[in-house]
Length: 230
Ligand SMILES: [Mg+2]
Image 1 (tube, helix red, strand yellow):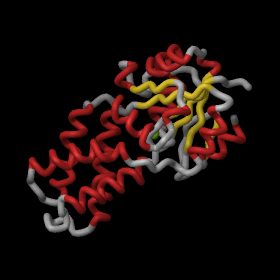
Image 2: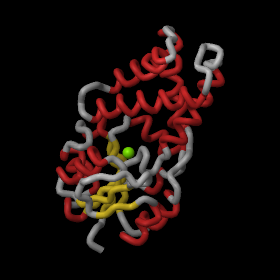
Image 3: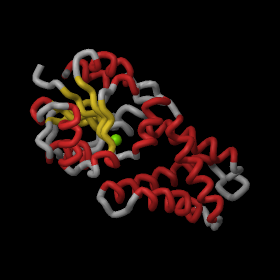
Image 4: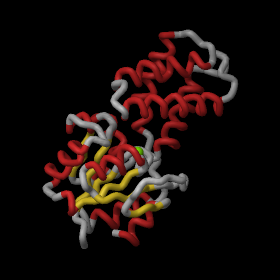
């Protein structure tokens, strides 16, 4: 086996961010009676969240805004979209979302069987731009903490993907060279571009089969394909 260490992204790669987020938003929509506040359809609430959240995370990944700004702007911008000016409600939704969402347990299809196979054969490390306590909660609530020997967050490493330093940090902590590692992730900029910056081979997890022009070592659309590659 050429590789000894597998670096795994967490959100959208193992932990099913879309499903877990939607479940949390449904709770918030219900609890805070957002329909009565003028958000007539839950589907609209979910759609606007997704668009605003993706935009904020792209700006966070690019180093343009920090974690507090994501939290501060996310629900404020969503409510503003529906012409609701209620600072208190926006802060409450923000706090509850951050608290509740990581406690949801949905994983991407075939995550467990792939991890079962890989954990017997490789040293598994999480490399994530998420926040320390939140990512720890997600791993625990979805029951996959024990598969990983290390969890490296950007907060712990002091650098975010795509900076090569977070990969260097993860490999130093795991005790492997760049040649012994391969990175699996769903984001072409942070996971794939970052691993390339660090001279680490890549597996692009592309469940939506997006068209792209990046150079990747392997590409998969289902996690169970890892069993054929590794
Ligand atoms: Mg991801």
